[in-house]
Length: 217
Image (tube, rainbow, N blue to C red; front, top):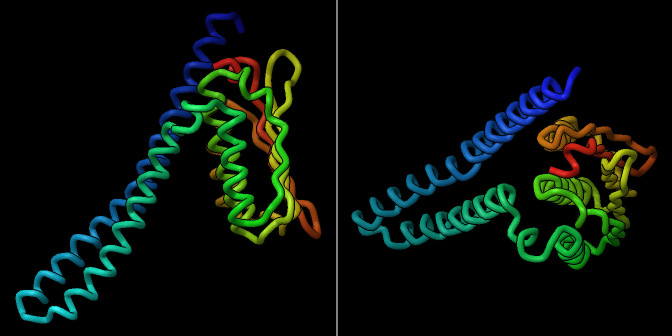
């Protein structure tokens, strides 16, 4: 394969990965905030009807539930916005952003998180955004499935200018295929190779290997 064919193949991979990411975000919007806002409109309509009928107590109860739902929709939308363009990453850089994320998780969940990610500052912008999202989701899933005591996040250089990210923990092994598929899909947007490993009786590890072209992008 000559250099022109290689560039075409890389462009095709990027287009496919971007299409998959758009599809994933569209599904998240439809299944999350869109459904929540639809339910919110129905609840407000119901509260209005109760007010017209003089049932102020019932209307107030409905509005309280609507307020809770509205706050949930706001959090979900903020999360989606952050997935599209993590604000911390823009403001303080990859290493500091992952460090801030780790401190938040540690303080809330009481889990020790060890980082070795200084290489992240040398990666391209697209690679930094993609890896940050993978780290955030991997840590979140680790604490959700059963309170690990320790999580390790490492980023190391590979031959030829590539990079490899590993996230490991000592919690219950990850067995849910949907979680691994989501992480693998994120890795595909970077043209990266994704592998996972369950360590019995406890522990899970994921590895994302970026080729040199993706690490620089």
